[in-house]
Image (cartoon, rainbow, N blue to C red; front, side, top):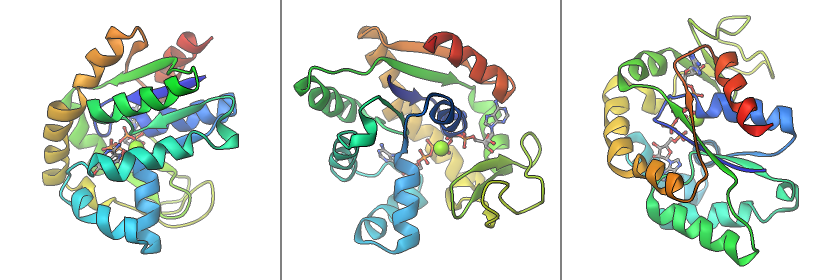
Amino acid sequence: MKLVMLGAPGAGKGTQAKMIADTYGIPHISTGDIFRANIKEGTELGTKVKTYMDQGLLVPDELVVDLVVDRVQKDDCKNGYVLDGFPRTIPQAESLDAALAKAGDKIDFAINVDVPDENIVERMSGRRACVSCGATYHIVSIPPKQEGICDRCGAKLILRDDDKPETVKKRLDVYHAQTQPLIDYYEKCGALKNVDGTVDMMQVFAQIQDILK
Ligand code: AP5
Ligand code: MG
């Protein structure tokens, strides 16, 4: 089962991708999480991507594509994976498809988590992310048991640098210009599935399970 999560920033791609990964026992591959881990560790890649991320801009395709193409060829991806935050441009999708086609493979479903822009800024300003394991919460809709502390691993929860309202607006603009065209791309190849992302996260997950069964 090879899946791609589509959707605006804050639509709930990460939240759903984690539930899919846990339920179906496949790896959750988030390019945003990979970049944030590199920034935290101070790697060369982290230094390169930080300036783009802090401005709400996409990281150049050449810094992303090889990383993901290598990752999906690892042993733990044999039974599938869920890609979250990749592809984000048409060239990224084409590179992924070309790499998969070499092995006679393809993406099974591109799940588009649909949430209108009006809901996004509120969601992002309430999001808290774990500095250690990447789990995400929302101070109103999905609060941690203890304020500021991750339920899963006990580490600190923070507001992401790019979740400030000005940066969120920029990310939405970038999404509409560069990533939304992927909805048509996956529709044309017959992999697109839309889910309503405005409902409670368990109800969103139920729609996804209907698609995957
Ligand atoms: P990335 O980390 O992928 O950010 P994003 O796409 O902007 O998406 P988010 O992680 O912000 O949102 P999400 O959809 O995962 O929502 P979540 O589940 O957390 O990328 C960050 C940056 O990295 C990019 O801007 C770019 O610079 C760079 N980058 C990454 N990949 C790249 C690529 N391929 N190419 C180029 N650049 C790349 O949910 C949001 C909040 O809502 C949470 O608080 C959550 O608890 C809450 N929530 C979730 N579901 C619900 C629900 N149903 N109801 C109520 N609240 C909910
Ligand atoms: Mg995410």
